[in-house]
Image (cartoon, rainbow, N blue to C red; front, side, top):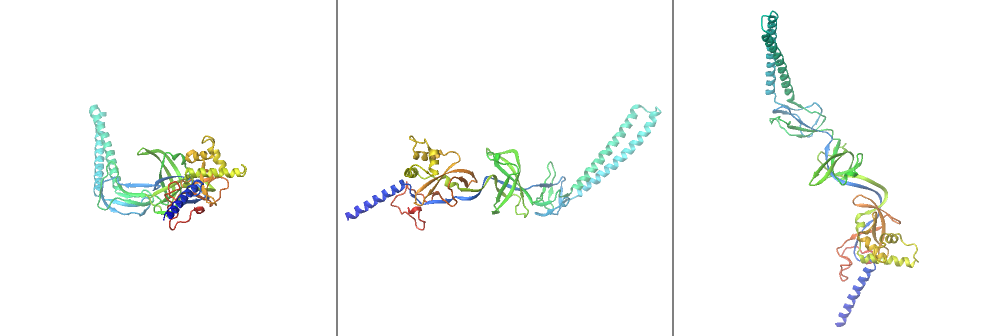
Length: 432
């Protein structure tokens, strides 16, 4: 029994030592999640949201008060300019016109009487039979009668126009997108005309009013290409062009935004007013390049593994007599020189991993054929927010790059006595 206990303890110690050695030699200690280096086209974009709207929208109201007698159009009805869309009851308006005409007739009669009186008194004034005051009074009454006739005619014209306003027509060719009245409803015209209908112009051409953050507005320009999606068709990608960048800013909760107007073609009518569009402004493009997911550029193994990688690369160079060093090793030394007293490469790579990389440089980690972690130094280019362009020697499409650890435990926290592989999981690279 004691012999079995001793054997068990020895096996446990051996497993622990083997696990520590494996981790320190740079072997893959965990189940990694891989992504591939891809070759293709990439576009850098600025993402924002906006609302689809018709290019032309007209609110149709009324300038007179009254009861709606007829409503001749409904939602989604096409209309043409001048087409009657509603009528207001004209009883009171017609009465006002009749009263104004009567006032005109009275003013005309007053004018005729004033003219006759003036002619009579003017003759008497010529013979010195009346005073200057009486003559001037007759002239004043004549002028007053003429002004009264003009006022009556203007009032008649106004009432006739109001009568015409009782017939409401469409000012443009378009489609009714909103109807706010029903027959029998009373509308009251005051300082602002009540809205009866909302008519949109040709919906085959629409626009998006996009709210762009002030930090990105400098990258937006007229004529710029735009792609966008809407929730109604999540799998479809639509295109547009920036027509205008408005100078007026909009501040919401201390966040400053500017409005960019994007022209959109809508020949099939699938895009509807009011839809929310997720817009990508294309600010830079590159074709036939290598790119990789951003997660791969963010991944860093623990410092112990990185030190082991550098020691292995240094040993490989020494075995070759210090010639034909790998590109990744030269880049690592160049970026990390002086990071630690003595100029050791291990200190350099540790410094780079902790945020000391120069601008435009990146680190990719892969697993070689022997199952050991290896480093590839690259230069980075444009990014679309998900993928980033990478440049470097000996890059190949399809190369497997570590993007993360697929389980929560790693070599620094897991126990060698735990089960190495869960049921149904693929084997780890290199058989570890």
